[in-house]
Image 1 (spheres, rainbow, N blue to C red):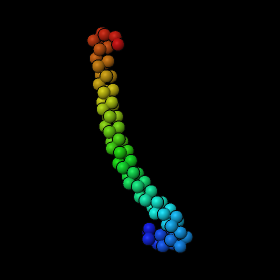
Image 2: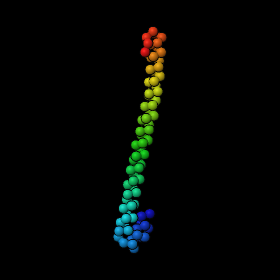
Image 3: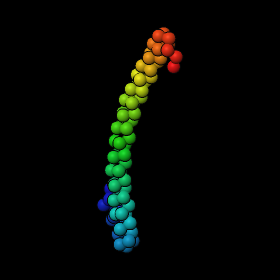
Image 4: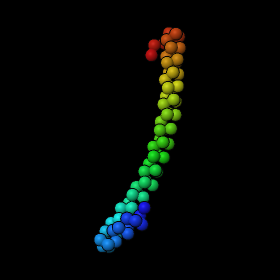
Amino acid sequence: MLDPLLEFAIPYGIFAALFIWLLNTTNTRNELREDSYQKTIRKNQEIIAELAKSFTNLSGDVKEIKEALKRGGVET
């Protein structure tokens, strides 16, 4: 992909060729960075889902404890 663009830009001067090269390099780096961000986001989403399950279980446990305390005559 880069070679045809460079061949097109070279007749317009070295700065046009350098611009095409820089644009391609920047896009390649951005794609790699975006992949890294997406992996991080997926990992964080998995962690958040696990924590949500844990909090749901904890909430159920707290309700059970409150009910047990009320049955025992202790007010919360």
